[in-house]
Length: 242
Image (cartoon, rainbow, N blue to C red; front, side):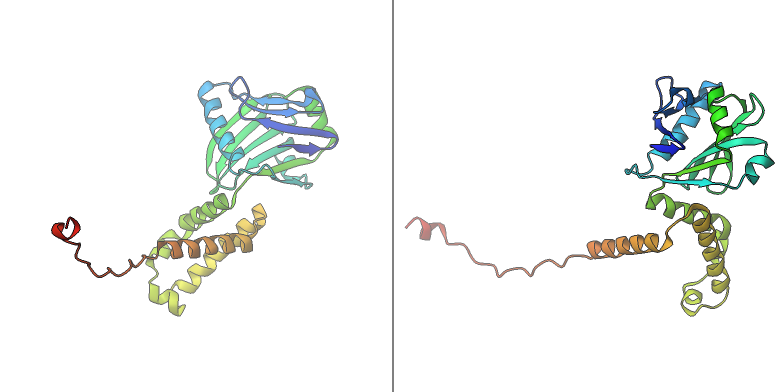
């Protein structure tokens, strides 16, 4: 990744030799852990989502955020959580205060649960002690590219306002009449909520895709072929061989 927590540095492998999601502590091997869901098919599915998230961006300059509010952890009886997300999907590990009660949850941008496995034991007692010493530890590793962010916004807008968007005419959009103002405001609310939740830079996102649209529009303009040149009669056989 790498991710620094306190005096320790963590990184990921994609995946480890056993086909499991693995997070390695470079400074203390006792804090390294693998995520084993106990069933090969679930592990395969978990690895696919995790790899997709971690490989979302060609850059390794991920955005790390650490929330200090312990409320969500205490409410669910957890001591730590680690979320990997590309906005379109999230892979979250929850460490419980109770033994053998850790959990992995994979969700999409609409908060639909795609996979959930409870009753797990993830990592060593050293790891649990580390989390308790650094409580509250709520980490989010955001790997999203601008494309991921754009697709996530489109997915959310379509899911919540798709039917209304389809009913708006071009004239209503142009004149800001009918349902257009209400739907536009609703879509803007969706975008702003996502901006706050994932710390998105909407200005950069808008400018990037506007620039791409302008470039594609320029490239797609039909080239006008040059006018045909006046036909010149070639010399006759007799002339060339005289």
